[in-house]
Length: 78
Image 1 (cartoon, rainbow, N blue to C red):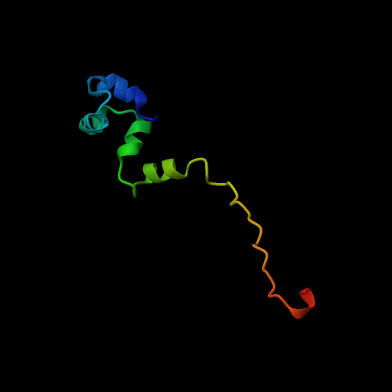
Image 2: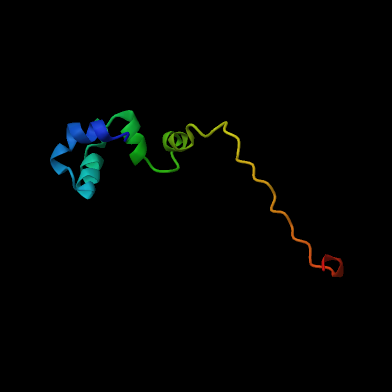
């Protein structure tokens, strides 16, 4: 989604071939918008790391109830 405007502007002739679109975007890296360029940067670079964690930074982890333990059957259960 970050690259949709760049695809339309730079690589429209390659639609709908995804492989050709990606190759076109890589060839035109210098002309990409900042959000789209962040998609193509190496995973360990700071902008990509920030893009991957955006929106999740201060969200609490989901809490799950512990699975109740079954007690072994006893003679009193009969």
